[in-house]
Length: 404
Image (cartoon, rainbow, N blue to C red; front, side):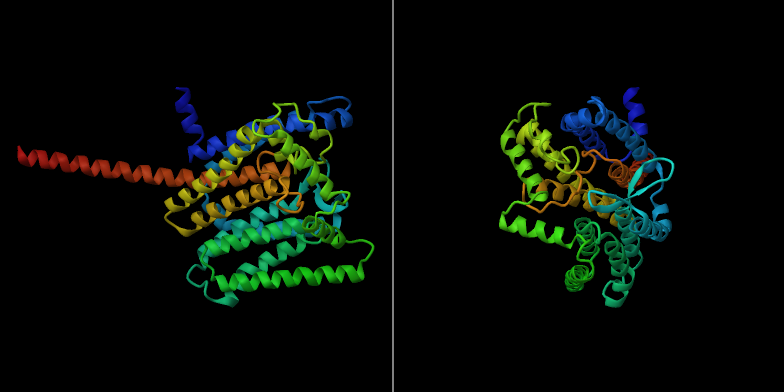
């Protein structure tokens, strides 16, 4: 009876539901362990502050996934444009009135709640949904360079341009995700190369203008230092310090780790419960029980996303699933690459594992939308199989009666 209740409540791809449970399990263990010291210092000795905060967010995220996966995915086709416009509006508000934390204005404080919304996360999902809608709508006109530029690249440029001044790494990641989605959607590769070239030129021009007109207050030097230090191996006071501490955590974790709660680098690694949580997981659980299971989990998610997309009869749900899956997996890979020193520090969280609020809620919505498509596709396939069985039974009856 319990199994039947679970099956009726959690519909769609069972493998993805299993992955959600796995991510939440790692999240609770790693967030608690990595944030004990910070919680003790900042919250009057309450070492479980971040644990309970993440637990409540994960409960809310589970509710969001369940609710969203019951919604018909067709509504996203209708509201894709509106979602994009609203997200652009939020980015503009953040640019003008956002809360400044760690020398960057990336958050919009919701009045009366104290809740800080990272608007770039919202815009990222809205842009993916919009691209899925546009690819489905114009799939027979993708060889038209002007059309692709107008309906695809122009919105991407606006969103990335609004994110870039305060968060270059997120803007580059969003642009890269969009290029992958357009490539999957069969936009000609020569178009994509030209857009990448334009994007690089635009970033360089923007950096030069800021360096000339805002010498005292801009993040160009931060971008430059992080990139130069990454390739040269020199240390700086921020990015390279974090990277070095993460490398120490990983190297001391070894194959099987130090055991849960035994991390030492959590006290020296900034953002140990968010941006660098992967390093703490490896330190405590090692490669065998920490790194490899998580990497495989995100790869399985990518595989299941492709499988769900293949089941779709129409273009929009297929592009929606692939877009959201690529978004989640690319962000996860970037986070892991930063932790192990293969990429400059970007500030990206590990989806559904890192401590967070906006990021957890946005990723929960994404998982719910993927499961919504899976639920509908599975129901259609099951209905078709039942219809085939009924036809087969009728044929057997007729054949048997005729023989008799």
